[in-house]
Each structure stands twice: as structure tokens, then as C-alpha cells.
Image (tube, rainbow, N blue to C red; front, side, top):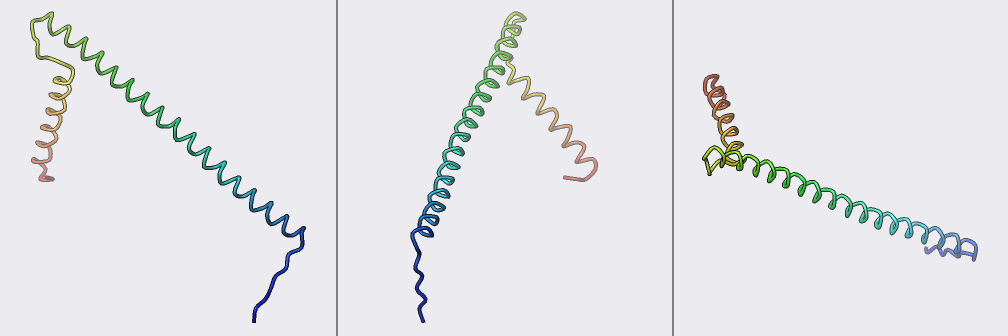
Length: 101
């Protein structure tokens, strides 16, 4: 019918020690994962700030040069957009010529 297990004090102590050790490892792993996640997010934010500041610096230099020439509406974004548009038009023409649209 039923089997009843009786644990003596040594077995109970070893079972509880193993349980607390595993629980401690799980908590330790969770805290280490959270710490690494915070560092990862901080690095991503720092990279985004660095890239944004570099684009702003290039934009300021291009805008300063354009103002010296007499053009007010030329920025890095306009140049990059034109280059990207030109690339897409060339790719479309290649695909249209080879019927891969």
C-alpha cells in the first residue's frame, strides 16, 4: 500500500544542506545574471550615445562647410540619404534588367 520513509537526523541534515546549497546557487546565478544584464545595457547605451555624437559631429562639420560655400540645407543626413537612394535605384535597375524583381 503505502511506503513510509523515515529519515534519520544525518539524512535529513544532508538533504537540507543540499537543498539550501542548490537554492543558494540559484540565487547567486540570478544575481550574477542581473548584474551582467545591467552592464550589458549600460554598454549598449554608451555605444548609442557615442554613435549619435559622432553623427552630430560629422553633421556639424558638413553643415559648416556648406555654409561657407553658401548652401544652408546640406547636412550629413541629406548626403547619406542621397547615397542610399542612389544605391537603391541602381539595385532596382539591376534587378529589373535581370527580371529578379
